[in-house]
Length: 176
Image (cartoon, rainbow, N blue to C red):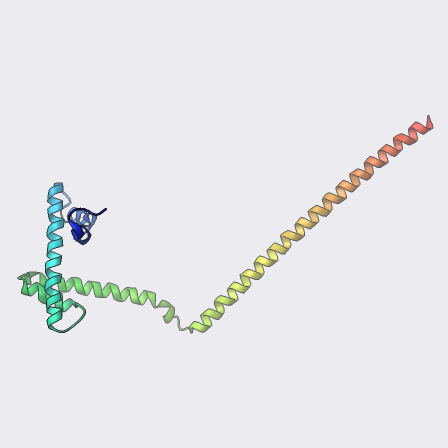
């Protein structure tokens, strides 16, 4: 759903994220919808301003990737120096979370078991599971065969009993 404002809608912060921040920051305050919209627009403009300045600083230092230092320098050059201490704290927090994620994802490596050995063990477990499944299927098949044989024997026995009963009736008729 494109609007007449072009790509501006694609370059905004999600309203749900802003609403959540407003509720967490000001839990007992009601904020009008137009005020929320203004906050979204201000946040978007702030991000555009800081990222553009950080991009210029990055280009001047002949780098291709904007680093956290470029963002911090952009805040300073735009007059937002009072935010730098908090930004550095948040940056450190992000680095800590990222490190924890990397450690969690490398638990497999920390087991001390070579990948080839883990793969071999996995294949053994798969083979064992396939064998158990095959044995289970074989048992079910045997049970079905036994049930079919029992049904045939019961039917044959009933048929024989019926024939025996009818031949006794014929014998009794002959005796009369």
